[in-house]
Each structure stands twice: as structure tokens, then as C-alpha cells.
Length: 406
Length: 91
Image 1 (cartoon, each protein chain N blue to C red):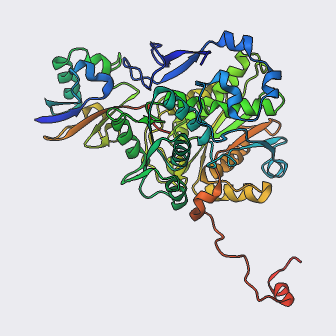
Image 2 (image 1 turned 135 degrees about the vertical axis):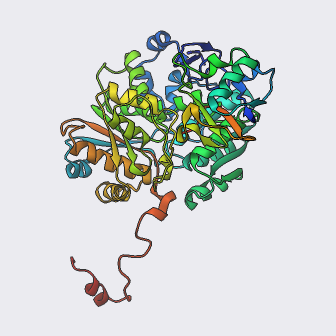
Image 3 (image 1 turned 60 degrees about the vertical axis):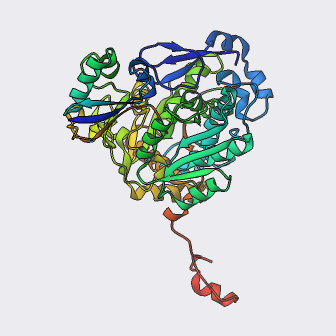
């Protein structure tokens, strides 16, 4: 980890050695990894990055990256042009950064690859997390590949697909009677006494850095430049803040030109504490009790909501508050126009994008990237269409009777 | 009235390593004041310059976030459990 200089409190600036801790002992502010930015700028070149493979670890200089890594192929997802969706929404140039092709089919593989690499580096043998589902999949999978035990904590009533895609890896899956925020509080307490690597508690400073690789890949895939706007679904707000940080770090390293990137967010109305704080013009997020079908975004007390608000406001962005009924229509719109089946968080991002364009928060000429953070197959219960559109006898005439458009 | 306060790992240097302390208090504000008098230094760690609970600290009375109750004025019934937990976790 030649470029990692330590950890620093984002609030009071107190510095710490690289160690498994996530909050400042003085003020409880979040700890962040600090790097030797000058050395990175001197050493890292576009040419070298273009020559490397497509793994997210090609950006190791910008990550807490021990030599031995837990890597099952996270990242390296394509940036896909979305002309039909763009036309429907009223944008001239739109890209999808779809993280559905990841090993466990969400962006969480990126953050967990970093978190468990660091957990191994620190000598942990047990991987743990509080999860709304996707993270549980990623932790269980990466732990299995690393030969670690895993114990993941989820709300007991989570979507079945998310549970099935976790238990298969053989770790402990603890269903907690309560909301994600209850699960999270439990894990924050457990992390104080158990010798486990909780990826989003004591490993959080390292874990969160993994999300920057989405911005890095976007910049590289656009031909070493940033887009005009990026739309990010908000749960804890960590993804949004780290994507913004990723573009900034590439600017500092001289890999892309300095250019403002509008950072926009989206939340579902049933759990929209950050969107509500944005509209209210307040600096702190007031927690809510989530009631949304977008379970992967159902965090009523978002840890990085405060910073997500700052990133959005500082970049002239906005945050869409998506009505619950538009979550599924967003999923359907993306599937119908671009052939990509996303989960509820992706539906929030697509309908959020639509609203941001309609309200003028994103202008028609602004080249936009929308993050599709996970696959639709894990949340089948929210979408319609579990039966065929027609059922016929195996006869040519029978088809003619049901199809109006042939 | 006695309540049990759960102390996060980051503050246990002030409680001689104790993860729980017992306190006679009726509101969260009193809990904080008594923690400070019994474990000097605690007040500055829990409250910001304006006297409010720190932004990145969550306080729960019997598992409910005090921001859903009366904040620092939330009452703490006899025998209740007050948990002080760093807010930056999860997601």
C-alpha cells in the first residue's frame, strides 16, 4: 500500500494509523483513507491504465490495496450507450454504468473486494456485515473465496432472492426482526466486542473507497474525461460521495481535466430522508422509518446523508424523490428501451433521472451517466409478469387469435 | 432512577474499560451530565460546542433513536437502557 498515508477524521482532521477502525475517537466523525496524492500523480499514467486488465484493481494506486487481494472478478463493467432511453427521457447523450454483471450482480462486489482484502491484511478470519441484501451476497461470496467464515445480518423479511443468493455460499445468515436501521445498530454494537471484520462498520473506511472505481471506470471508458452529470441512487449516501470523490481524485492525478460534474441522487418516496433534507434546505438529515419497495435503498438513517447533501449542493446537482409506483415503472422503462433488467434501486435511478430531466435539474444537452447498481432477478416479487403474456394451444391459428400486431 | 448506559468502545478509555455503567437519571441530558461528572471528559466527547449531541453520535433509549422521541430531552424510565452508538456505520 505504497500510496496510503493513514486515516483521517473527516470532521476534526485527527489522524490515525491504518487500522480497523471507522470513527474518530474524539468526535465520532468518519475516518477516511488518505493518500500521497503527489506520488500518485507522478507515477500513474493513462497509458499504463489502458494497458492493464479490466479488473477494478488496475486502480490499486487509488485504493487501500494490500498485495494479497480477495478478488473474484468485481468491477470492469461496461459503460453502455442508452440511445432509446435517452430519446424517451429527452436527453441527447445517456450512458448506463451497469454493475449487474458483477460476480454477485451488484456494485457491492467492488466495496467488498477492498474490504475483505484489508480484513485479511489485518488478520481477520470472520467477515460480517449489516445488509439490505446485495451486500450480504457479496460478503458471503467473497468470504467463501477467501476461506473466511461469514456472518451476515439482514432484516428477516428481506426479498427471498436476496436471501437465497446469500445462503448458497454456506455462511451464517442472521435474519433480524426489525428494519435495516435496527440491523445496523446491532452490528455497530457487535463490532465493539466481536473480533470480526464488519465490512461496513470497522472496515468501512476501506470498504467505501471501492465505490470510487465506478467513477474511475466511467472516466476511462469515456476516453479520459468526466461526464456532465451522474445519477446515483442513495441509500447510505456512501456510493454517491465516493463517486464524486473518484472524479476529483482523477483530476488531482492529472488523468482527466478539471471539469464540474453534476452529482445527482435519487431516493424512493417511502424512504427519502436525503431527498427531503435537500428540498428543505437543511444541512442535517432527519431519520425516517422506511416504507419502500426499494429495499436495497431502505436506510432511514443514512450514515453519509450529510456528506451526500454537500456533494449534491456543491455540484449544482439535485435529488429526485421518486413516488413508490414509479419504482417498478422505472425498472420496466429500462428493460423495454435498453434490454437491461435492474432491481428496485435501478428503477429508482431511472425514474429519478426522468424526473431530474423533466424538472430541468439535468439539461437535455448534458451528457449523463446513470448508475445501475444491481440486477432485477433478485427482486422478482416486485415486478409483474410471472405468467406468459398469452397461453395458446400448439397451433398456428391459436397464435393469430391472441396477437393483434402480427 | 437507575438506567443502564451502554458505552461504545471509543469511550471505554474513560470508563476504565467498562462497556456498561449504571446512572441515576431521568432524561438523556441528565445521563450526559452525570456521565461527565463520574467520568470526566465524557461531556466533550458526547456534545458539540453548542451543547447538542454530536452529529455522528446516535443515542437510543430502549432501542428507539432519540431523534424519533424528544432528542436530548427524551426521558429515560427506571430500568431503561441508554445506548450510545457511533452513527457512521452501514450502507
